[in-house]
Amino acid sequence: MPAPNRPAQAPTRAEQGVSEPTRVERLYLLPLGHLDTSYEQMLPGTHDAARYRFPVTAALLDLGDRGWMLIDTGMDDDLSRAPSLVWGATPLADDIRPDLPHSETLTARLDELGVSPQDITHIVNTHLHFDHAGNNHRFPHATVHVRSQQIQDTADRPGSYPIRWNPNAPSTHPIDTDQQIVPGVHVIATPGHVLGHQSVRIELTDSPDMLLCGDAIPGQDFLDTGNFDSFRDPATAAITAHHLLGQAQTRHAVAVYSHDQAQLDRLRTTPDFYA
Ligand SMILES: [Zn+2]
Image (tube, rainbow, N blue to C red; front, top):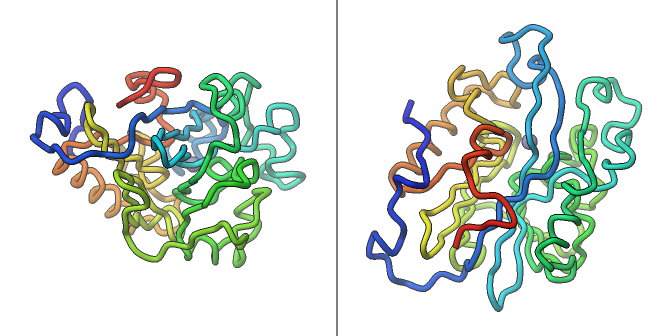
């Protein structure tokens, strides 16, 4: 298993002699509260009934004259005052508890940077679970880039996707292949966690590429244990995780996990940024 790469060791695009202009001017990593659940939900069979607390994250990209892009939108900001909105009265409500102070909502994070909901022109969702697409409905001006298989899965298994947003809205851009969404933002199919999961590679000028893994790699624990049993397709997910780490190494990119507090503590988070 390759070691997780560190920003300090990876050459920047400028250092690699890559001189073409990139349109991603800044990348802000946004911590958006925490979820408290059990190891049984995340890494079955590893720690019995112990609790597992992890951060929810998203990213904001300054695209210059193309506006602003969100990579995932976290869990619904309304959970900061009404946690029952997540799972309602389902049995999961007891086992997946949101901890979302108002200051850590997406609205507050954007406010702090002077970005309004109308400024968001694009959203890329790694997938549509509630902790990744919970605020999609707050950005009516955004084109939402999400895999077709994920859109279909929300119809097939609606209970798995408790979000207040209609994936079949006209502003959705269904994706079937790996592609560049705007200059410097590439989506990559990373199957296993759910049908149609994707990760996002972002090219910056003075920082290494950032590979936002989404839930293809939620955290180092998953790599250390090799335990992807809570995913839809564990065998495929394990192959995907190795693949992603290999791509990160080849491209000297920083692989950013979606739910890893220790890694998040080592990275720059908003209002600091990567450029
Ligand atoms: Zn997640």
